[in-house]
Length: 111
Image (cartoon, rainbow, N blue to C red; front, top):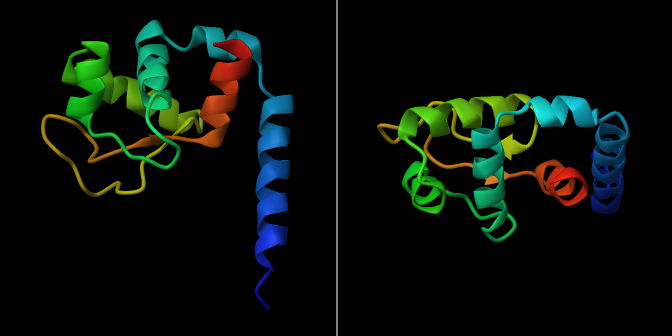
């Protein structure tokens, strides 16, 4: 049995609220400043719009190695979505990423 759309939406909202309520500001402050720059750059894109490494580089001025490390940190923190794990666009370790709603909420509250 498949759940109705609105039920899935409510479940998604509840998950984000739980993530935010369990969020530790000290852990966020431990995210290096480069990762924060990447997250801020991703937040400038429209919701659901994916950004490639070269676009992130243009907005941040960071080197590819730094961007790759920042994306790994942000993915582990559930602030960035990388749907194509197997695809890469050299010199980046990813093809394109987008900021998650959780990432946007973290920036709004603690950015």
